[in-house]
Length: 182
Image (cartoon, rainbow, N blue to C red; front, side):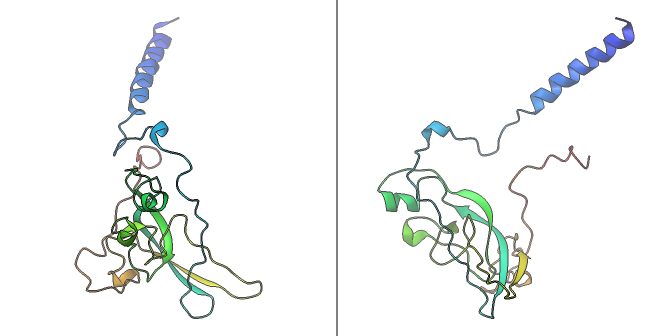
């Protein structure tokens, strides 16, 4: 083996060592042990039909960030009599653009936590039922702002709009900018 090949091989080994250590980065918020999560204690969601705008088959659907009680705990403790303490999960999902933020406090959950009786924002989202040979119109609205229910620019209509209500929020997943647009 000549010096040139040896130096290339050494460089490849060193780069591989740094790459492997970077792939095991810390996960923000930590991780859960899957063996600690009780199975089959929360009901499966059968998504109901989403409300339209009231004008024919017309839908104004917004995408928002909110909390959903996916793991056992919160409102599910009220239903199944358990005492699990798993926190809600941050999700992005769809619902009618004019719906308020979910509020499940009356069910034993929390403010801005779905599923809630006052809002159709849910994960998985509600369904759209269409009839053959009937026009169905859907307007998709990006409501990934701090307070979509108060931001008039994205269809909000609740209360007074404040200065920071319409600022877009950051993505909930980390984005590795070195992959495509370094």
